[in-house]
Length: 154
Image 1 (cartoon, rainbow, N blue to C red):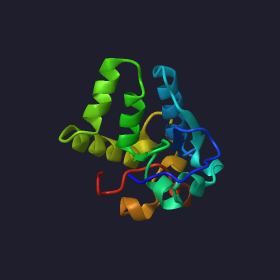
Image 2: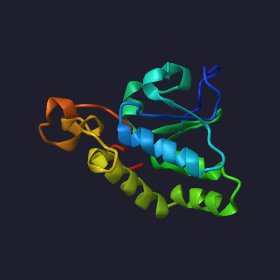
Image 3: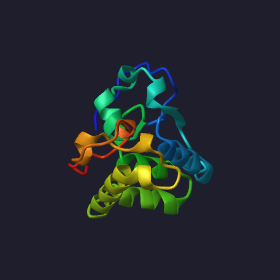
Image 4: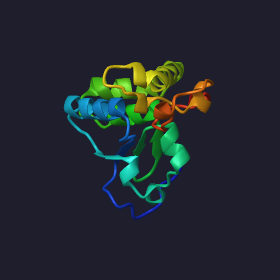
């Protein structure tokens, strides 16, 4: 996690996600309805990424929660969202998501969901990972980038 540059355009914290992916967008909307405290949200395609210390590679690899102090990728973004809540139980679960060995399971779940989001309810071919990351040739309509966890499984 890196320090965030000053003067972002949108208020922090901010949830940054892939707005071209229907599954990602509907998941963010669902989370917003379920969680009492929710940060500003924006598709990465609408942002000047450098204002948030993010690159295109970053946002093609993960969904992010950007705060004034840190940037949280992938499963750690979910952890950050849960730790913002007033519920002690949700905050506790948020800490578990970021603590080994639970963080390893959370990273694996994030990776599996990200790599199969085009197959999940609400997913479309535009939600599929680029063929280079799937290790197979893809149809042109499936060649799209979005918030994913790389094989490293952070």
